[in-house]
Image (cartoon, rainbow, N blue to C red):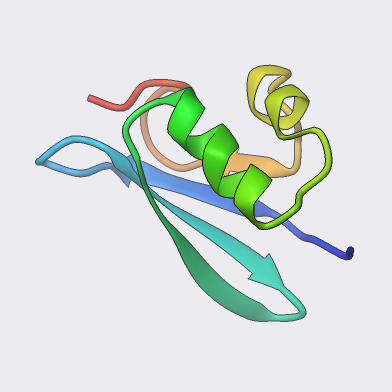
Length: 73
């Protein structure tokens, strides 16, 4: 499966971060993550290989927008 950058948007005022993936030039919203476990689950559901390593290993495939990575509030 070809995949491209995953964007984790800045923290919303209500908490959580919107997660978007771009595949073949199309942005798809995966959901709102409130933890790394949520982000891992979103990636697992779309069959991204090794989602734990991508999220917890600070992969360059994931772009964290605004604020510190792995923070959701």
